[in-house]
Length: 121
Image 1 (cartoon, rainbow, N blue to C red):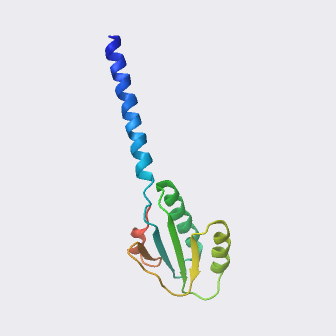
Image 2 (image 1 turned 45 degrees about the vertical axis):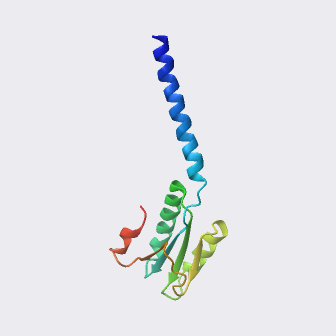
Image 3 (image 1 turned 60 degrees about the horizontal axis):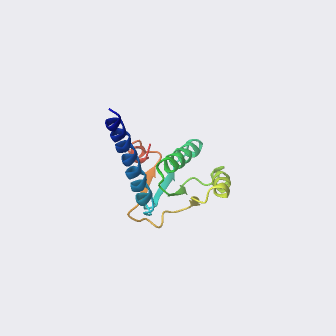
């Protein structure tokens, strides 16, 4: 009976060690940075929530991100909001036009409901 109990405990210890070793070696690989481009069409009130949700999801999943907000409406408080966020986080910028689209770039037009399904949450 004792031998069987020690065998089961040993199997659990070995399984836990294998999981930790796998996690250690798989986390050393650099995951691809995802680039989100948010097209702002009169959505300045909700763009902060979209950024916070993308940021929270990236931290939770361990995926580095870059967020570019394209300002299509002149004026507004969007520049001040993005400048404030970029002081704390180095992963958000504000541009006037789209540039630098790669394979890992996800373009989201906030005025279209179909594009909102591209958000990671």
